[in-house]
Amino acid sequence: MPTYQAPLQDYKFIIEDVLNTYQDYATIPQFSDVNSELMDSILSEAGRFAEQEIQPLNQPGDIEGCRVENGEVFTPKGYKEVSQKYLEGGWTQLSESTQYGGQGLPYLLNGAIGEMNLSACAAFAIYSTRDGSIAAIEKNASQDIKDKYLPKLVEGIWGGPMCMSEPHCGSDLGLLRTKADPQSDGSFSISGTKMFITGGDADLGENSIMLVLARIQDAPQGIKGISLFIVPKFLVNEDGSLGERNNTSVGSIEHKMGLHGSATCVMNYDNAKGFLIGTENKGMSAMFAMFAMVNRSRFLIGQQGTALAAVAYQNAAQYALERVQMRSLTGPKNPDKAADSIIVHPDVRRMLLTQRSFVEGSRALNLYVAKLFDELDHHPDVERKKHCQSLLDLLTPICKGFNTEMGWECVNHGLQVFGGHGYIRENGMEQFVRDARAAAIYEGTTGIQALDLLARKVLANKGETLQIFTGEINQFCQENKDHEMVGKLATELKAATAQWLAITMNVGMAAMKNPNDLGAASVDYLMYSGYVTLAYFWVRMAKAAADKKQSTPFTQAKLQTAQFYFDRILPRTATLEKTIQAGSDSLMEMNEEAFVL
Image (cartoon, helix red, strand yellow):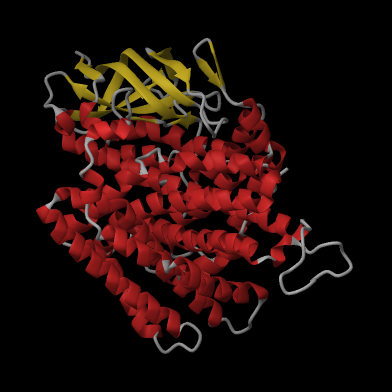
């Protein structure tokens, strides 16, 4: 039976010593009184809830799964009760606007709590997140719609699934067929089918406020003709009470590889009543509204990669200490036993340190990104807001794409540490593997994230966005090149960053001659970018650990893991450099018919 322990010490270290959070929040009036005592107390209680309430749902919920009865979705036993406790604790309201019932605390708290919940039970945690839907409504809807829907969404008693994909189109939203016909009362009649809708329906709340992409009659083809609508499961009266059942229904729920406790629905709309967000027939406005929720959602999915790798690492490390098999290559370490613990074997340590170096590095990246969201939303300086937006544009696809790919690698390492016992259900490791796999697919596959990063976020503005981030990295490296304990790492990072910029220029030049070269390089470019990005956060963590007045096992482990990352993980970029610059000829020259031979 797997266990989970909230990484509170690591959160405190990253928030206080690495990110200098409280100094930065002092420049934001809304957060000027946020301090260590407040953050520690909230995270401690959130960790307790994740460990004691959410984690026990994980294995039983995976075995039981969700079911549909009479068109209604029922979640596994215990989900509804724990969800009610979560709502009563006010956890959904922490960082939301006080105007709509939120507590107005930093989104950084959501970053940490989101990881803990996902580690404890990913399938359950997905239901409790409405960040993207709330952001889309708050930033783009009319005031009447905000007042009508946001308070209950913030409170958590209404769900907010995003409904984009259709059976014939996933990421290519320009192909969608769901129709929206204008009605005399100002509403729209929505008809069509959506699929792969996470939490499209559930028994955890009293209403489901679906955000649906549809095409208004006579709208332009492609994405320019897309509009965004609110389609509630139950219509909402003017006084906020629930009215009649809307013409929405659950066609089925998918039988998935993992995340069995999360209902992935086929949703049918049969002249359902919907309400426009944004301007009619202004497709790009709808797309911008959609991106407001997609960026937050992609951040959440990136955290899923970190979170499942984290819980897999915790269990694998404990197992490696306890499991006795064979002797150390350098002689017995436990001569009073028949064999040594497997943690003495170099290959087991390789797998564990790969997991640990990714988990702790990506955790620092995630919290950095969450802090950027805080500054983007609340910082009084307009230029600082623009700076944060540029960094988020660059780092969101890295966070989503790189974290989920590395998370998948790391949960597999966790299973491998267990050997044959990892393949057995009761030990829980195979569930982490199954649950982690979806993260690299939904909310935009790794390939989609890679094209977004390279084509839209880097090359489209001639590398200006990338240079903002690499400028920050280079400044840090310059300031610490003579640091006694991390100067060498800073120098290596600076070289990797320079190579990142050079590779970007080469890819851009190649793509101008042959656009296929861009597509061929994109995923490798994403991974290269991720490895260098985590290297930056590892140098920052190593410096913070080295600068502590007193060395502790925690700070020593940070320094040792940083060195492992630079010795064994960052060198992966050497291979990626070759594949990025290999071009597309060997991918594209084979005839299509030859693939089926």
